[in-house]
Length: 133
Image (cartoon, rainbow, N blue to C red; front, top):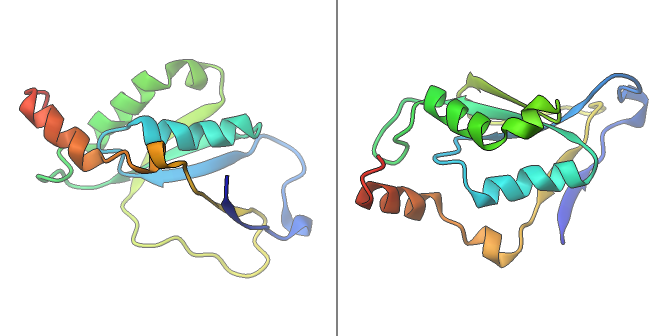
């Protein structure tokens, strides 16, 4: 499986304490593709910080950030209890930026087709048909 990996400056990396791999998204809804990404980090022996973008609900993003928080928390409750995952709401972001010499890595994961082809839009459409939203 392919990853784009930009290694942070090893001199600036935290050598003690607990660290987390950050996953940022809307999670409208939290689905198997999101779980796959979380599991990639966990399978690498890393803890995961899930950051939910605080956006105003609309037709394409029907859930409030609090509803998303509750959905993700319910889905990953055991991992949260084991302190492998933390879930939080963050202000909406327009970009993620870093300068030279950062003390962390930046990793892009490329999922297999069966995961890549999961569509939150199609999931929401089915949820609407089923009266779930």
